[in-house]
Length: 70
Image 1 (cartoon, one colour):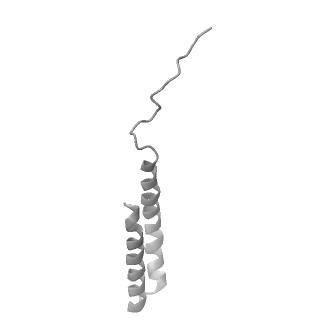
Image 2 (cartoon, rainbow, N blue to C red):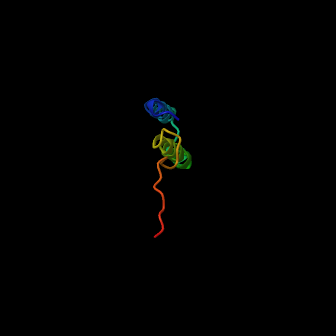
Image 3 (cartoon, rainbow, N blue to C red):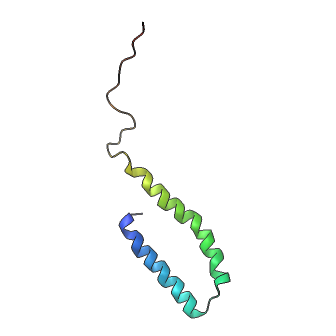
């Protein structure tokens, strides 16, 4: 999921909710679906930020200090 598409997805969701409200679908019917979708949507959003920290593909620094025993 790309962050530049999030406003477009939010707009599509708002249009969908407005369409359901105009069609006369009660909120008690829509609310459980929104609650059920909240968990996977939040997981996608939160997991997309995990890959932005290290762009080199390295987990550890390349320069290591030697261990000296006395």
